[in-house]
Length: 232
Image (cartoon, rainbow, N blue to C red; front, side, top):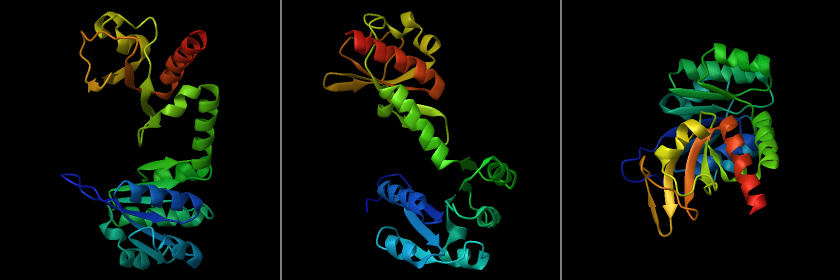
């Protein structure tokens, strides 16, 4: 397990529900250096994660005392990943919010469930199956998007593209890049070096651009990049 170093503070994350989705969340948070507590009613799931995360506990997530004993009150982030029971999901989310966990995100099964979670104060509501389906469809339609990563808690993506022909030999100021493409260049990679671009930075054909943009705006830029690649 890799822990954060330097000035990065290790946060405690509690994941409620250790099905396939909850396990994937636990594994990734652990890889990112967070301290992870995972809880579930099913012993087999708990045992499966016991060697992966800091603490795996078998308990009923609708039992406030049990959650407190597992360390929920000290958690910085909670992820309610329960997929089988809407009632248990809502109750667990309510309890965690009541315990003062600063950020409580919850998995929703449908729009009504999502509205209920939002109304009780969930910081973020997500639909794993829907979100994954949309990402897969986007990547099929625009393969360039497979190289991009979604920024947590937003609809923005970050990734690398090659400059379009219309960009090369021009500065960002000349291009009016942000206005024209509804995207921001975060970093320019040129040969062995990388640097933060300025308004007078002139783009070269061999550059690699690390850009950030909203999903819909990025689709338009990706379409242009793919068209250029097909014509080259």
